[in-house]
Amino acid sequence: MAAQAQRTPRERAEHRVWLPAASTKDILTTHPFTKISNWSSGNTYFHITIGNLVRGSKLLCETSLGYKMDDLLTSYISQMLTAMSKQRGSRSSK
Picture 1 (spheres, rainbow, N blue to C red):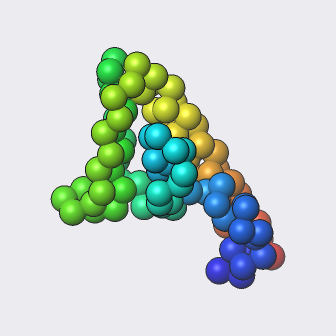
Picture 2 (picture 1 turned 120 degrees about the horizontal axis):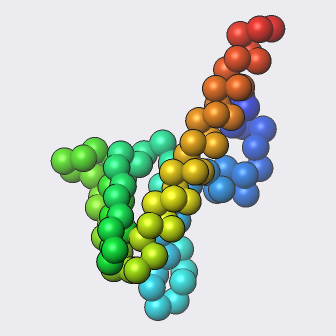
């Protein structure tokens, strides 16, 4: 918890999914990556579920670039998990 308190608001915001309004690009809401329960993509869509699979928020985007969003999210979460694992390892060795 102390490590999070030391991060700047911008650093905390970078670990979130931002959902913008299509027309204005204003940020409607943000969700931490830890709340993502599922995502998938196909030739014409990208789908993400935030929170509980049954009662969570679901977002379905019609796009031909869903695979890129899938790859980006997969890479980012993998990088985040690796960093968290290294951080835990350095704490336990102290």
